[in-house]
Length: 325
Length: 245
Image: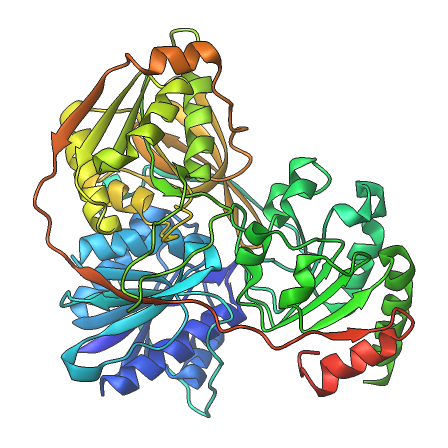
């Protein structure tokens, strides 16, 4: 028996969200009194692979053949399922990232395994049951789901589990999967990443703005605030619907859900659909000129006032703070 | 070109979410159900792609008779016909196994879903269908263009976009950007009443997961209000009290 974790990379590098899933999977392995094995697919260098040991992986299976260099959903799912079978994995853990959302359901079907995605806590194993808590109803609630299958697949939400580090490194083994020609029917032609921006879904700090900003020409202030803080930028639905900001910045019930440590909402009233997407944020700061804005009811800190006056002051205050820190 | 669009019936986005007294079931009293907003995007694109006799759009839904208004809405938006698998939508594995069974027997070039349902937020159906049918699945797409028997697709990834091509048949789950949701017109609403809606029995599928209980997020403490002239104080509190910067 073992626990298997898929370690996703972006252009050959692991991100914090990957270390989170390894830490999380290591805790599950401990709970089940077994060892954690990681499976890496694509091109990651040996040093980066062995650092997975720091987060609890004992062994790393490295599948890095030429045809696996770019992501092919079907093929990657086959590799993960094959590794799970070989290592007799009782639990397979993945990140609930864009890529993980495409992989975990395929892996689950291949292994006839129950799947819990959007998981937010460690499983509980009382009275011979295995339950996992996940978000539901667009962040308005949580559901506790029991997995009845022999093999279980869990996809963990970003920023839901603390990193745990220790001083060990992992053994790396080459993994040569059996391929099916039919697993390679999609072809990636191009990957475009904006290098100077922080990705929103797994961002720790988020600066978000709404219609109160009056127009897209006023976003320079929002971007500057995000830049000095080291935060990702986000927006409300009316803003992305009006084309002021791209759709991928839209946070809320029909956009994406985020769970950062800090969410700063500027000029957003706080409609129930928006709040659904941000309810797992640890700390919420609201800046709004309307003291009756519903967003203040869920905020930790609030400033009632004009964003156009507050933002320059706030940006300067952060610059001063960063200069001292 | 034959397109199958999978739709689900979800609580209205403004609905307050509550549960029964022992927190084991969603309380549907007073809740309005709607066509899942993401599925509307998938449907809108399917209709655009088949306009002018270029193909047909079939709606499939796994659910009980109570969700027929949602299916009729999808027909009013322009789908040609619909299928309802008559069973409670227990979980994603069950639902996708039912849809895969139907799709296998009827043959489709493209199967579209919304990126997730806004109730249980599983974004699982598209990829599970792909696996059951052993065809490619692309999750959370932002753009879908068709040329002959291939599609060029843009998929969202963390901090960027991936461009890819795939040949028929395939499954994709659609997010904002793929199409603008449409509003049904009078002619659509009238014709929806008479469009074919086939009701089929579900096949037996093993139950791998069970939803045991629900909870709502813990209420937050009250807000600390600061004057707009003291941004330093906010920074100080975020550093020393909240410890987030």
